Length: 279
Image 1: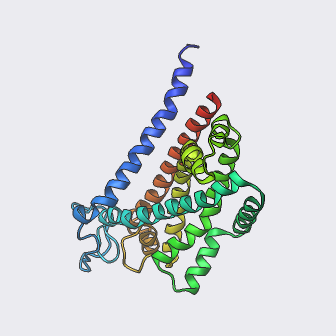
Image 2: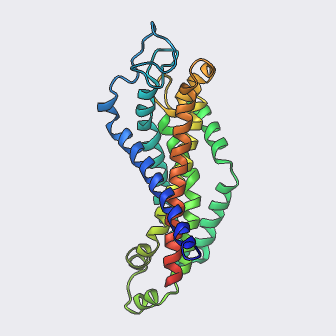
């Protein structure tokens, strides 16, 4: 029995990661294939109105007679691309600022960190709500604001990784070859920290997904009537006792997707950390 315990302990995380990857694959497939699989997701049937699960509508319909399952699938088209843009945009900004800050140090590092401290002092979601409310809301505006608010996290992650790498022998060898600082940062250091930034990107993806859903729930994201998980949740919360699935389904979609992204992100961090210790 003593020899079997470690094997079980090793298998459990792999099952969780496999389940998380399956969830992400299903969400990504829904986002890509929604125009063909559920082309009439927003079609209304006012005669039918809101109803619980019935034949032809596994999750029932909302108060406008729209199929909840089709809205759920179509909602991935706004949930995934926006959150992905936030994760990728903040990653790019973080790399552009964090690489020189960690490599050169001095005033570049101080300036970057003071900017990051200032942004960290602001509550990201509250700032996004205020900006979107003042400027009239909109999905694109919400994504742009979240990119700027998430970038300091990536900047700190990249800077810390560069600080750990810049005194390693391969960097000193590159300096002896008189390679330019830009080439050392992009060709030598960045490939060794790419996995860390990718893992952090998964975590930002999850936070952005929840943040965008929250803005849509408040009416500051996608327009009214658009298939979106946060918007569907807001539109149907008053119908919880009539058709609970109209509220539970989009809520579960947000929770499961965010949890899956966190699990995959943590898994990548652990693999990177073990690889770094092995070196």
